[in-house]
Structure formats: structure tokens, C-alpha cells
Length: 226
Length: 351
Image (cartoon, rainbow over all chains, first blue to last red):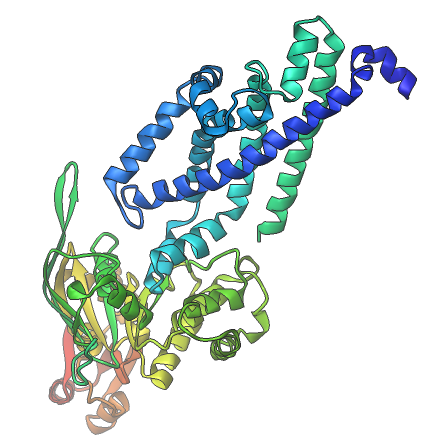
């Protein structure tokens, strides 16, 4: 096994601890960014859903401001956004490189996409459920937590899976601007030093990771759907 | 909220609602005057788009209106603060055509939903849920999910949920329109029974005249946002005035079928030498005598019933018979006079 690995991936095997560290960095970026942006996107998605026209508490001003900001950030290519955010990142966390420096731009990059995904998941909640909840005398916060977010769970899991897969792509891109992680590993060795096996090893690990995320996502959807 | 004991359950005066869209405004409801007394089963009937759903949604404040007033138990809906409105909604149950049960919750969880945040502890809620499921005869389905139930069972769960906070008014928005005829009957029977045992006031929105006939005591017919006719169900069925109501009533009766038979010269309605073809209709609530055998005995004539359609509406027979009377001409005419004096609507179709 080890023999085969060193034949196929000579440069990775000699840098195994570094490869492993990069993988852990990728997991940390995914976990921390995923968690924070999930909270932010859920919050924004709920606000957009209830303030839109015909929503629970229509508010054109709030809706339009958030809607336009989301669109603005969605239209900036991530690599440019990450570069543009360098001064802000530095001011916020003290550094713009490494895993620590990557998380802020990742959050800014993924949250608008995530927000749209959550918004579409919530729009799949039958308006009849909302009407029934209103007719029961439930308040807006109660309806958000007991109906929108609860009945939206399977759809929210589905869009979170999609978002996590996109986020893996972004974590690889931050590698270019010094972000660390598997993307950084693949670029430094595979691209800049022509160690093609480093690139392939990265691809294999990322494909497996995406497969795992999708598997867990499907499992959770099945458990939560009745 | 002040509750005056003698105020009607729902009193609507000169209500007007306008829908404003970018293309312009459209009057959804106009000149609506309606009084629903406590204990009524009030039908609101009309074709789709007539405004019935909008009207019923004004009652629990799901829709706002532009002019007029709407009092529920003496409280003006449009003057309530949001918190008071939510309090009032707890006292007004509502059921829907699409049931609107929460798929992520079990049957028991759905019934418990309106009880959360009402100050009841977990145990008291569980007890109330069990009572309600008993009431709709679904105690054995408590742990099932809505998707595992039939349409009729879903509507029963929805009814249990709507009754959770012991409302005095129940709004039913096309609750039986998605159900088959037998299930419709059993749901209507359940509503009737709940009305009788709990003293519920029920507002029934429907496009099916048969639903009105089966459970309502009063009805308002809505057409293009205005009420074209309202009153006691028996009177409306016996003597519909507006063309729309007449066409609705005709759909529930087959007494007009005789017109087809006449057109076809059917032998079924052959009047013979002296005979007369009659359509007799019950138009008053006070008829309960065995009229046909009575006239045939008293006036010595034969009465051949071609067909009939008699139903019991609001406790009285409603409908009529198509008969061929044979015998001496004078006797027949005397019998007809007799029937007219008994408040029977008589129409001579052929002689």
C-alpha cells in the first residue's frame, strides 16, 4: 500500500504531514465559515422572506436594502472580492493570510449565495401553513421558528449541502491569495512546482469530501422528511 | 376585549374591500351586510372568485378591508392592536380546503401547535390533545404523520387543531371541497355534532349547494363581491329569488327533469284522457301531512308519482313531486285547490 502510494504520489508521500495539515486547514475553514455563514444566511434569508411583498411583515425598505447588497456581493467574482477585502480582513483579525485570514473573506463570499439558497428553501414552505399559523394567533417570531424554519428543515439541509460544496471551491481559491488549505497545497506544489501528483491527490481528497458531505446531507433529508 | 353577551358572533356593516395592484384597483367586496348570530351555521356560497374566501378572511383579520365595520363578539376587528388580534384569533378556529397540517409534526404535534405559548404546561397540553383527538375519533393516530392519513382523517386533525383553544367561532373555507362525497358527509356530520355539543358558531364557505343544504341554517349567496341573496336556508331553497341562487338550487334538485320528458313526449308523463301533469313543491315549513294519499282518498282520483325529490332541510321537508292526476276533471281541480290551500306550490305542466 505504502509502496503503491509512493509510486503514484511520490511528492505527496514525502510531504504527508504537510498534506494532512492542509486537509485539516480546509476542514477548519469549511467548519468555521460554514457555521458562521449558516447563521448569517438563515437570519438574512428569514428577513428577506418575511419582509418581501406579500410576506408576513412586508417592509420594502428593509427588503430592498438586503436584496441589493446580496446581489452586489454575488456579482463580484470571489478571487477579486478576496483581494479587495485584504485591508478589512487585516483590520479585523490582524492578518490576511493563512486559515485565520481566509475565514473572513470566505464568509463574505459565501453568505450572499447561502442567503439566496435559504430564501429559496423558505419560499418552498407552503403559504397555507403560514396562513394556518396566523389564523391560530401565532406571533411572527413563533411562525418563523415553529413553521418557516421547522417545516423548511429538509430544504434547508439540501441547500446547505449545495452551499458546502460551493464553499469547498472557494476554500481552494483562497489558497491563491495565501489562504492555506488543500487549495494552497495544490497550487504551491502541483501548479507552481509541477508536482502533478499533488494536484491529483488534492482532487481525490476533495471529491471524497464532497461525496461524504452529499451523503450526510441526503441522510439528514431522509430522516427529517415525513 | 369587551364581550357583550348579546352581541352577534359576527356583524358586518357596509364592508368594502378593494384590491390594489399595479394594473389598477379591483373591488373585491362591496356593500356587505351580514349578521351571524351565535349558534348559527352560516353558509357563504358563491362561484370561485366571488369573494367568499376574502370575506371569511376579514372575519379573523387575515385580510384587511377598506370601508365599513366588522364586529366579532362585539369587538371591532380593525381597531384591535396586534396582540389583541392574536388573542381573538385563538378564539376563532379555521379549517382549510388543503388542510394545512404541518408535515414535520405528528398528528398530536399538530393539534398541540396552537396550545404552545398559551401558558399550559406540557402535561395539560397532552391532556387537551388527547381529548381533542378523542373528539374527532382519531386517538389511535396520535403518533402518525399527516402524510400517512387519508384526506378525511387530515381534515379531522385540522378540526381538532382548530378547536384546541376552545373557540366559539369556526371558519370553514371549502373544507370539504377536496374530499369524496362520503367523506364530505362524515366531515359535515362531525361539524354538525360539534355545533350541537359545543355550541359553536360555524361559518361555512362553499361552492357546493349540497353542503349548505346538509348543515347550514342560514346562507348568503355572493356574486362578484356582493351579496345577492341571504336568509334562512329553507326559504332560499324553497323560493330562490336571484338568478344565480335559482341556478344553484336547480343543481341540487331533479324536479326540472320533467321539462326534458315533456320535450321528448315521454310515455311516462302521458296524462291520458282527463289527466293533469302537476309539479308540486314544498314551499312552506309547515307541511307534514301525507298529501298524496289524502287527495286520492278524499277526491277519488288516482295520483301517479312520476318522480320526486324530497330532502330534509333545516328540519323540514323540502323538494317536491311530479305527479299525473287521473279521474273526474272536477275532482282533479278540487284536489288542486286543496293543495294550493295547504301551501303547496303547484304548477300545471300539461293537461
